[in-house]
View 1: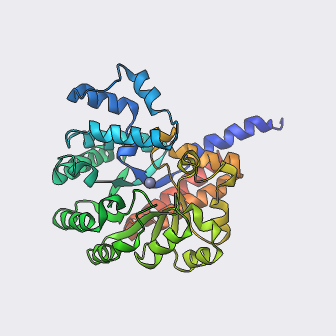
View 2: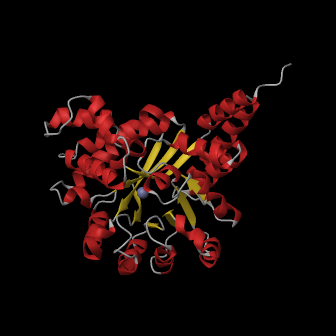
View 3: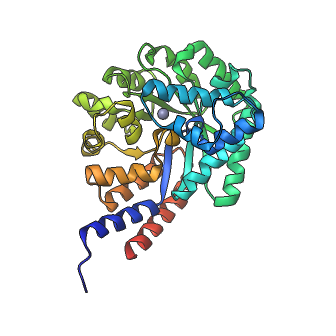
Length: 349
Ligand SMILES: [Zn+2]
């Protein structure tokens, strides 16, 4: 029997990585809007946009720099003129996730981005859950929601949002604090997070993406988070790494997003290996996939190509993503068994 050539080996490994079972812990619903989806929405609502066809939208989605990304993101927000579009965006996001063999998604919903534009919270939440139910029927994929309180709106708005969740919290399992880290530290959200915890919500915050370790310290000490979104700059502070480890906090890594936004200079410099070496659990996620020209398969493949992660190591990460998800124990057990079975089958070839 001939020895397979290295190049072919490489491709085979990537094919296996694509088929690995996965769980997504960090994806923004709006940020997952595909060019095709956006075009469909514009055609439906007739919003004036400078796109004539799909190629125009695809060109617009090409990542340029951070201000351009923000422009794409807010343009999509502007196009969501009715709650019903959330059903389509969510359904098509889950379609892409299912195609990457993702079994469960924890999707981020920045409700106030739309409430301030005049949309109704209850109707949007219903539309998202409708998209989730349809996707589950079609592909068996499940999805829960976490509300991004968006730090730029201030703690009073965040407290108001908790009120909405308390009244209608269908399928909402957690709160998050996205938005601009610089100028909006986590400390003023202490009371809101305490209240969220009292409501039974799980706690996450974006931190250490465009601000230093102090932002992560704040999220840990004042907000008591269980998971950190991004957490890149933690690597600069050995004491912080120890604290993250001892508290059992998970880092939701989003490698391509970090690279595009400039939080890391190259994929080879991404600190994910450093976190794992410290004994910190990580998950691998796609953040805003079409806007960063990625998907969760590509995230796993990048770790293999650029940082030498083996299939077994990646399988370990995907299993950890199940353990550190906000799913109930019963569903975790089911997923763990499914993941291990599929992994064994993939190894057998
Ligand atoms: Zn994010």
